[in-house]
Length: 51
Image 1 (tube, rainbow, N blue to C red):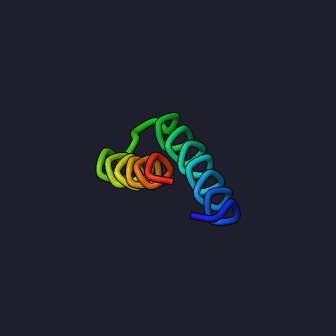
Image 2: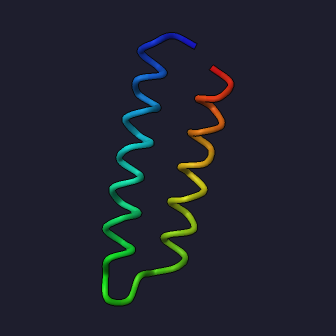
């Protein structure tokens, strides 16, 4: 995996962190949204680990 692709994955991972934090701070967080975002984040983390 090239460094450009890795940088893109790192940026997406950080963006998901932000979205998870925003959703978590809502008065009534949507658990299905949080679960979906966390799964996406995990897939990116796994892809980075393989890099």
